[in-house]
Length: 376
Length: 240
Image 1 (cartoon, rainbow over the protein chains, first blue to last red):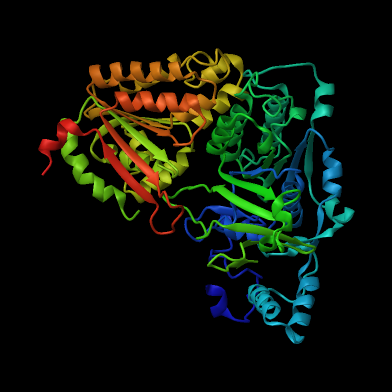
Image 2 (cartoon, rainbow over the protein chains, first blue to last red):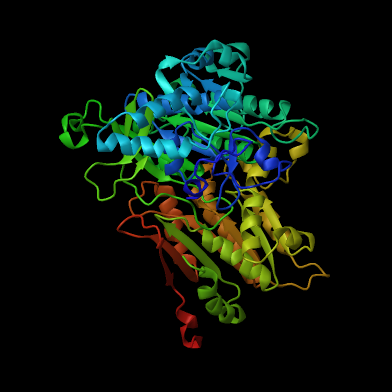
């Protein structure tokens, strides 16, 4: 890894060790919170979880969709949803938050607070000097080499050039930070009351409105390149909560023979077109465990780029199984996209479990597997 | 897969002389078979055939970047009239967000909004794209589809998908003596009965099946899977 070779030298522009040396005028490197993939130049975003970025081969590609199959009570999928949006705030991206059950303003208020470099670095320094057990000192070494190349003073999150951040789930993001970014809302009950019933393309009304709303924002704010004179390009992070649930007006989650099984897949297809033509990325959580017709989930997977399923141990027999005592659940990576290339970057292991601590959500191979990679 | 095109190109080279008017089915199970699509696209373009590519799943730039790695420029092929590229995502965008009068009757993806299952306009698009014009000097025309399973997700009934392929076979294979290459997804334990119906019917109709399968034992970093060749029966005596 290049990081080890550069040692403690600090590049003056604060670039991470993963960035290619591109000229300052290059457009790709100019967008905050992105970096080009080392393999095929695809522009990548952080999902908000550095360990998930590793599992996905470096990050989430711009113009793609990350689909999360919700765990049974939606607890951890909601957390991933929040990490994605929180990362957008720290990077200064624009947000588009859509929900049928929660007011987007409330969702944003509850985003986890980012851990800034100086706070985290101080903790790392403390760890380095203290005498510890072998496991913990190994952990701090892994953190240390990654971040020792960064400038020592970090004044604000907007100035952070790091790819991927950490969050404290016990604290919520500060209102000042929230005010610093531009965001757009879509709250279904509000939208339905504003306009009369319309049905386009034989799609559920809520989905139609959502697509129109997303397209309008992409066009008006120039994410599709329609304002070339705009000085600074930015990314639009779109988050859609619990798509497919009854609250969206879709019946695929409550009956074996839904009236319209094509609404969700048509929605995803049109969305895919929107994402591909703009500087955006989208996270969608779907209550897959409620969809009786499994053919729908197969089609949904084929129409999504990255698909990750979460399985929590809450209420299952694994909760008391000593093999899983350190973990809260499993992560299944169902699909990773191959974009602009014949093959994809993917880690070698598929046996993954996740562990949530106050300041860290880690994804690891399950204890007892032959490999013991830890994605930090 | 290290260099799949070269291992297939000898086979294809001898096949092109005798392999005309045929339907090739590309099938993937537990892996991504799109590398086969990229191979056929660049192969037929290099061979000088006129290609109509119905690209439903990815953007033009995605195919273009990969084609360039395989030695072909799709932009140049389009400019010289050798490639007709239907970018499904873009056409669907026009249907969904465009003005009613501008969309008109000719958008190949208009079935997404209108009657929901009629692929007639898409067939007309294919037919007019591949019809030989006087100035053309291209070899046999080729229809390439990536991928057919998407049509089912957009509300097209299996019988209409099969009708579309049938009409295309009549026009492209019989009348124009060209080839059709189609990609479908399938899984042994799939619960998508409509998709399995289309796949089984196409397996029965096609002259050649290339089946990319992921490893049964699970994921492996260096070996992604295997490719099976089926139904090349009438051509076997010609192969060394």
